[in-house]
Each structure stands twice: as C-alpha cells, then as structure tokens.
Amino acid sequence: MVSGYMETFLLVFELLFEAVGTAIIIYGGLKATFQLFLREVLKRPYNLEKVRKELTKKVLFGLEFYIVVAILGTLRDPSSQELLLLGGVVLIRTVLGYFLSKEIKEYKLGE
Image (cartoon, rainbow, N blue to C red; front, side, top):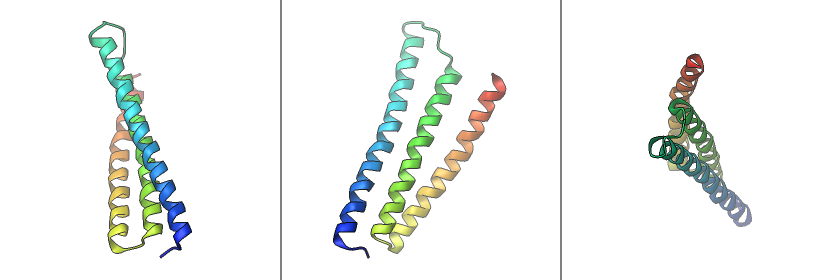
C-alpha cells in the first residue's frame, strides 16, 4: 500500500489519463461521424477506408492511456482484483491492437 500523498498523486494522474484516453476516443468517433456526414449527406469526397483507418488509430491510441490508468490503479492498490483488471485491460488492448493493426496493414496494401 502506498502512503496518503502518493495515493492521491497516483489517483489524480489516473483520472487525468482516463480523461485523456476517453477524449481521444470520443474525438476520433466524432471526427469519423462528421466525415461520414459530409460524405453521405453533402456528397463530399471522403474515402471510407481512410476514415476507418483514422478512427482505428485514435481508438488504439486512446486504449494506450487506459493501460496507463490500469497500471497506476495497480500501483495504488496492488490487490488481486487490480492485478486481474490490469491483465484484462492489457489482454483486451493486445487483441484489439493485433486485429486493428492488421486492418491498417490491409489499408496500406490497398493504397
């Protein structure tokens, strides 16, 4: 267990990184939605594969911040539950990262 000040310090950064990760994912989703709107409703020329690729990159980047949040949570409270949560987040991020990176490579082959 960490001391009171260190626990507060870690908690502040946990909340900060969680907010940053969430903001990045929301930004990517909103940007993709806006580009789809321009393409579908206003008939602007947007490549759907490019929109998907950019959204994928934002989601992956946002998930990196969630790994940091899980690590900080484990440092604050190194219980079995926190270690399982960290392992789960890292596993989900790894699996998603693998498949999303595979998609990005497919986009590059298509260009």
